[in-house]
Image 1: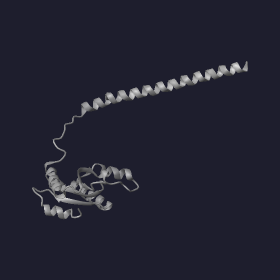
Image 2 (image 1 turned 180 degrees about the vertical axis):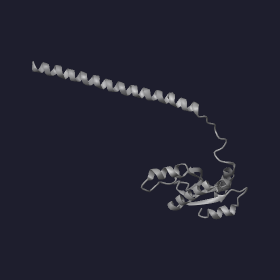
Image 3 (image 1 turned 45 degrees about the horizontal axis):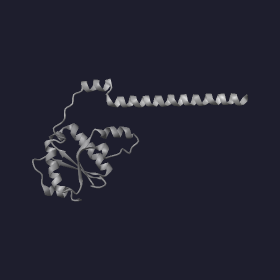
Image 4 (image 1 turned 135 degrees about the horizontal axis):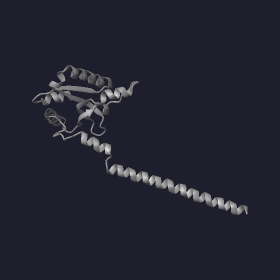
Length: 179
């Protein structure tokens, strides 16, 4: 008789385990299906935001002055290094102070016009900032001083180049003599 009771309880435990397992599996499948649906169709909030803000594609990533300097720079370096444009400082530097979050915020919205990197390792070698008339305002000059200090502190050279109608190949080669 004890054996029958034991087998009966064992049978109930097996049934209970199967039910719980099926319920868990069913919930996981439902969550997966919900996740896929969410990815396929944007939420109401996302749709609402896309109606509130309008965006248009820019004609170019670079300004005409930046395009001109990029072409000049590209011809001077002759494929020896990689040139990247509009690189965020946060992608180049890592804050090393006690309040790293505040330091990250301070550099996250700032960028340099060009960053030259080693071809294989992509290690930053030198940065170039084109200074046009917009760099003459007090606010821009304060920003420039801060950016200069970040580069100096981290030990990476930042060259400031005055925007011109044309650039001297010899001056640029001299500036990049390490290549």
